[in-house]
Amino acid sequence: MVGGTLRDIRAEIRSLSCPSGDYVVVCGRTGVEPGAVLGQQFPDRHAAGEAAELVSEYRSVLRRYDPGVPYYDPLVHELSERPMQPLATEPEDNHTRYRAFCHDVSGSLFEALAETGHRVVETAVMETYLTLAEVVEDHDDFCLTLLWSMMSELDVRLSPSEQNTIVETAAELFSPTTTPNPVGSTLRTLEAVAFIDGYSLRPICDPESGCSDGHTPKNAIRTWELTFGDYALAERTGRIPTLPIAVDLLRRTPERAVRFIDGEALSDGRWRVRLQTIPDGESRGLVSVEAVENRWLNDS
Image (cartoon, rainbow, N blue to C red; front, top):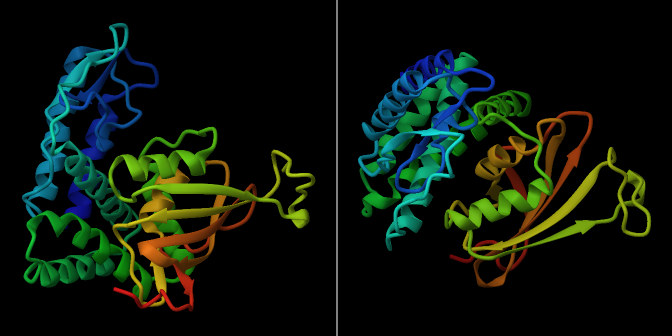
């Protein structure tokens, strides 16, 4: 199965890494670390070179199902040197980042399914994807179709608790690191990879969580209202997929749970989502969340 293969490749990469090495693997075109080696450091150039080859192998596995998986051109970079300077940005780079984001998230979720023993769900995801891929006219949409298939099968086949385990396991593969303003960082990432077009972020002061005069204590529940446009995975059918947002956000808040409260369709293809980050308790709504019924919900 694809998940087991990806998991084994990542395990090989981690076996080559060390806590504080002198080398990393980056994409020669963008200067950033590919998802399979994100946060990993290596003791010497040889180990990093082997990891770079494994990154290419990881992408090749995904490319069996979507020939549009971007080629990363992974290179070894010594940390003591100046930051890697990416090659000049080309017009198609925005779409390349978009596809890379889709496949990084999908790949991590396949690994999580394999790690947690949900092979039946993994098989269902691939069957749904292969069925839909036959009618997808634009091959550039294969990556989004794969991610949608993952979201759909997780939603109908797993309990909320099982969904949490899968999404949290996937997020852990990206070397989680606490990030200042994690919700804002996630929205910036989604915009940078063209998964959304424009956004706003508003903290909501909830007195029940200890918020007073607009200030929320560090260890209190934090509530946010997100508004964004042209969400790539949007469905106006009663629920809004939260899966890619959840994976990215959880890796930035490893010490807190994330709860998606609800979503709402707005005019002009925009969406509003409310979520909370909490210091204790279980996450909720990590795959999809109910959308409020209104006149824009079923607009095409």
